[in-house]
Length: 106
Image 1 (cartoon, rainbow, N blue to C red):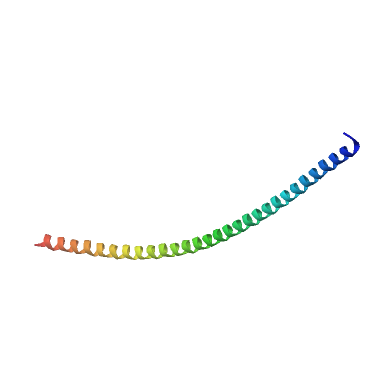
Image 2: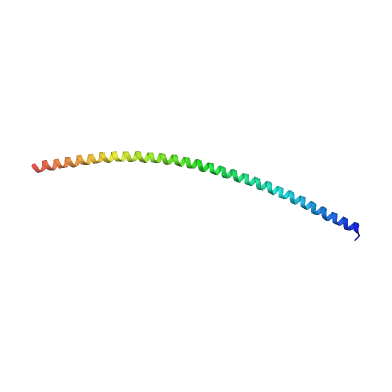
């Protein structure tokens, strides 16, 4: 192999390496773009998830407040009914006592 052939071979190898390097750079750029896109998509998904969680939390707080209100109202009504029942029982016991007293006098 003479010098000219060696230079041709070296140029051929160098051209192949340069082409491989160019292809690698393009591949790395594409990978970088894909990675950046995935990061943006992930950030957007996280943002939407956070918004959904915030909405759910607000809805839950509102539902809790409504439930507390309903429980207080039910408790009031229960106390009122309990008092009414107590008065009715007291009246019934009193009436039975009067009836027993009258029957004893007979």
